[in-house]
Length: 162
Image (cartoon, rainbow, N blue to C red; front, top):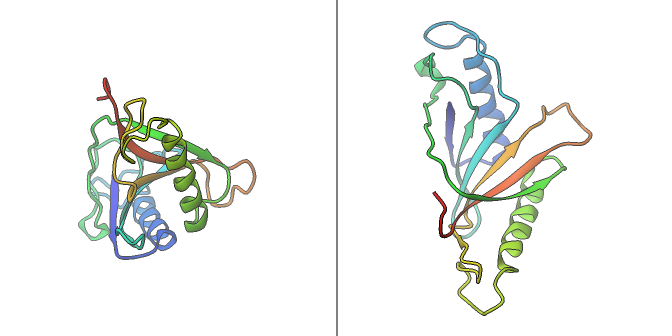
């Protein structure tokens, strides 16, 4: 289940999207049924070419058996399998830490390139998708201060990848 948001900040989108999804799992759905919450919140982000925030989707992974009330503006977001490069980090997921980790992930992928190939294709055959579209996975509640686990994910492709 996803809460699509446009033209706002990462922090504001995560808070607003989480709130809508929280209402859904606590009975704001057409069945008025409660659903267990997953332990992770996935936020897919699209930035403009200049790096400014463009849109995001805040997601919980839930069974599709109940439908949200229309006023929540939630969408069922079915995803196909994809190949991603992942970098873990333990700080709070905020714009500065996300940008830092995305740059480090991109640099790690670039390190595979030793033959002067194009920026999007490494010597190992990994093709990086648009660096302006990526995903943040948050595993901890906001009150969880120590040993946090987050991941930044960048879609990639290579021979044999789905």
